[in-house]
Each structure stands twice: as structure tokens, then as C-alpha cells.
Image 1 (cartoon, rainbow, N blue to C red):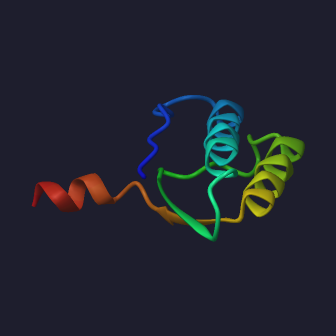
Image 2: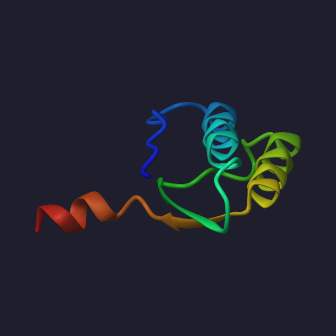
Image 3: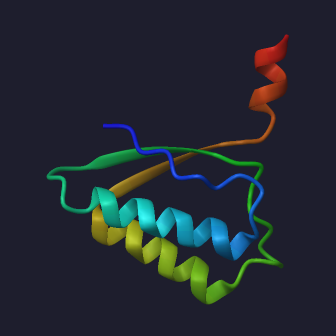
Length: 79
């Protein structure tokens, strides 16, 4: 099952809350889950550290492995 939360160009806190919502959706599914996360990254100095910790905790509780893919992918696909 593929879940694609609308994250886009939101603030770091909004992106983290979007990820938490996706983890909540995946949590009831049995077994280990994987999420491929396309992002240009969240700057650590702007991200709320409590929200970041809550997001990591939500992924662990939902048994979700996160595989981030950097922002350079769209430019690679255009070549």
C-alpha cells in the first residue's frame, strides 16, 4: 500500500507532523514497514528538536523504516 502525504514546501515542523500522520496510518498494519521519503532535507537548526524526536519515536512505535532520498533526484530524472 502506498501512502503519499502532501508535504511539499512546508515548514520543517509541518513536514515532521505530516510524517507522524503517515506513521499513524501505517501503525495498524502488521510487520515491518518501509517508507521512501523524498525531500531536500530538514535543516537541523530550523527544525523543532522536540518535534523531530516525536517523529522518530512515532516511526519506531509504528515499526517503520525510513529511507530518505535527497532533493537531487528530480534533476537526475530530467537528464
